[in-house]
Length: 316
Ligand SMILES: [Mg+2]
Image (cartoon, rainbow, N blue to C red):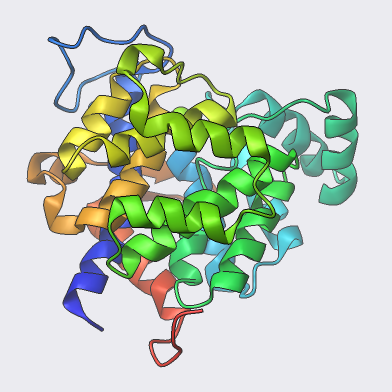
């Protein structure tokens, strides 16, 4: 495989986890003053450099993809329920409502339909935050990438903006892995997905690069997370600056910075991720077989996911 492509694939996985860990101590806080941005891994509720639920769920999705390709939603739901069974302290509301039902034996489709029927407007960022493994596993198959991105969302987050938002983020990664510029990757993704992206989501994405940081809400709403991540990608010119800017928006800082990290890692590659961040990065998948993850493990995972997409196939 081309070394630049390998760098981008690894950068996407490590970048997502690094963004999550950088944002961890800033989660639920106010936006940091522009002249006092946090620029290094800091301790929060977890030790400095530790990733959170966003990356844990992405790891569960990655493990499901490695076991079942194409993506099997029943296998994925079972793995998410096993993660939920480890009592993660930071599980999102929608995810908790769905997975608690799955964990007690309800089929995933019935569980998620029942939860969404009670709150049809629920459109959190819980599926966009974990979607990047699909982009690596389907890096040579655009149609498969879009379908699997949507399906992994539907398991817990069936709202149209969550489903389309996941397809959009992975589409941007798809073009970045091919070496496209961030501007092209975003505009091409909007063009390719124009029949599935809800108009308000398109408007939010298109407005992103014109926003001042004070205009970004960075809440747990999928629309805000996608906008912050695109803003970070398009208004900076390095991995480091993209994730620093997004993490320092506060509120759902870890999630937005994780999505920004997946994008910026795919754009700039592994070596662009500051070495001290990579060296500090750690986290756990607490479901069996319980294991600790460091940057080198995420690199190996990225390699394994990308090997699901043979190099001999041409892009889409
Ligand atoms: Mg989190």
